[in-house]
Length: 297
View 1 (cartoon, rainbow, N blue to C red):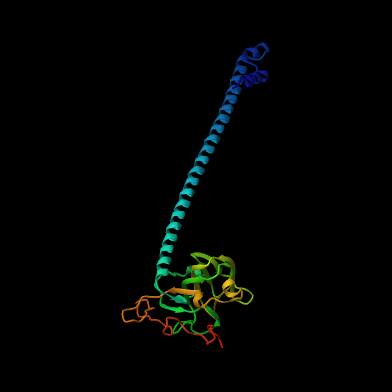
View 2 (cartoon, rainbow, N blue to C red):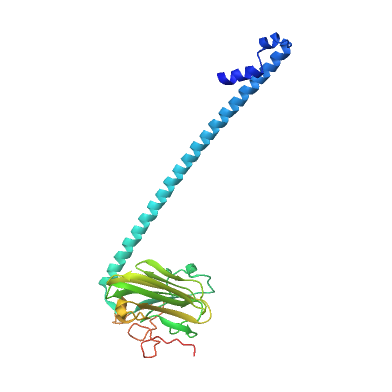
């Protein structure tokens, strides 16, 4: 108890001697005085203990925050290192593909699905594909036919990969329309994800970006559950004189697969599935005017 508190205490509760002078019975006053003094000391000790607990709790929380911040920083560094490693592997793979002979179009890998899949993110695009071939372009609109020769109409996914060759750098607009879902990746980064249907029942994504002249890695993931199929990839920019057209021709390319030793190009996956293309490594469902025709008529 501080001197000030003790003085205030004595003002209202005099000492036993003072109480005796005032005519109080000494023994009763002594008991009362000791009880009140003990209570005041207990209250002061309680306040001191509470302050110490509050201080300890604050220090504990500060330490927990520090540990959490260190863990988050370590996790960020780990993710950064992993991203750098993946980017290095991607660049190496891209350089190897650049060194390999290139042909126009995109490599196409198809995955059969046993049932309806709720989202494109639930498809394992890294497993061994069921069919492999190539396409000149992606320009399929409301088709109810087999997506590729001898292929299914529903319940499948596809991965198209290769290079986007830009002759004139500048501002481009990319258009991706799909039914069901689709995603577009440029240089390893997802730039469009089609998930929600629009008023026409289709999913559409539009992206404006700057593309430098040269070769860019491109990948399209596609999911088809039921009903009609739509998958269209278009662009507009310096290479198209700013007209919106399907990306096709020499604007797309992929590394030519190795031959199987008898001079034939093998687009199969080694399990008995072969190339369903037209003999030049590309699947031809066109109508002769350069556009892929999968109409539902």
